[in-house]
Length: 239
Ligand code: NAD
Image (cartoon, rainbow, N blue to C red; front, side):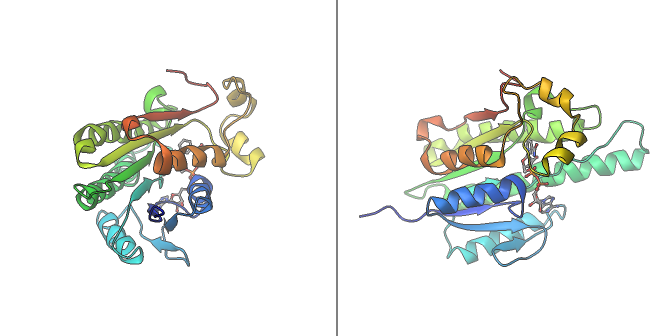
């Protein structure tokens, strides 16, 4: 008898890394529902800045996937500047927004996934797209981004330790720079040649490379790997 087709929810799938993850999973035969800020043909809309949006998204995704989700990929995220010299309220609003979208919404979805998956005979998997910034830190205008991604890594490891016995596996991926926009614009916005000089591989990662790692964790990684964090950064930060 063949294994059942895995049912997968991928957040932030309208472009960039999320779109590549959906393509990689679909190429493997998975049944995938995507997500973005607003509804689309294969995409459920939910603005994750709204604290209740993750719960509503989970309920809708379950409905679309006939009541079964085997894998959750938390990929949605924002990378927005908050330099120290902005006004106090702007600073706090920037922190709240980044922590809500990058960490709280991902945590809410992980919680609902665990409640759904725990104790099922066949378990389930969580794949969280964090960042090199979790370990290395980020620019002076992006402490909140680094903190949100470090939180994601800590959350992933806690879930792996806490729910392995109940069949729920958890993994994180930490990309360095990933070419998600037009190459020239992307490089210019992140420091140009200086950025490349810091990457021994000599280039930034492609979305398909991150997607391949995410698909491996979602579908193939042995259960004993639970809690693992995969770095994809061209050796720009080796730990
Ligand atoms: P992107 O900006 O191209 O896409 C982000 C996705 O998240 C989009 O689908 C967008 O709709 C969704 N999203 C953003 N804010 C949202 C909100 N409020 N509500 C609902 N959805 C929202 O980003 P990307 O570069 O493909 O990054 C994807 C993930 O990878 C992010 O978590 C990011 O932090 C992480 N990452 C990216 C890089 C990089 O260099 N591109 C490096 C390390 C980690």
